[in-house]
Image (tube, rainbow, N blue to C red; front, side, top):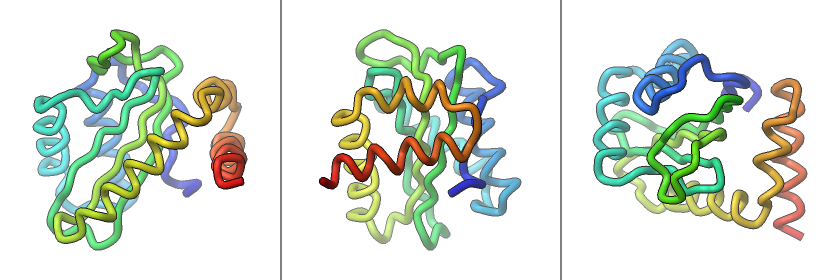
Length: 149
């Protein structure tokens, strides 16, 4: 998971943030068709924002050729207008790409992320305050363990 975190996004608009995350995945050979993925993510956003509020967005889509689900985390210290229902900027982005052949896995991942964020409101602040990737991952692990207790 260490190689699946962008600790500070360079971009500040919805579309450019999506492009930056897709490019990040492409460089790490997690996806083959970066242009296709970017288009699918944009199409999904047009259906309705994936920003769930409280500073969190979960851009996601299904894509052929993805054998195992791809999940990454990106953080923006500045905040990005991701068209959240609460009207507030998003700071934490969980990007999820999964196979259309296994829709239940996609739903399980999205539900787990949403549960983590809703049950652990402080997780957003702690992630933003983390100084490096290993601290970010420690925060997520700690919060996940608390939820499971």
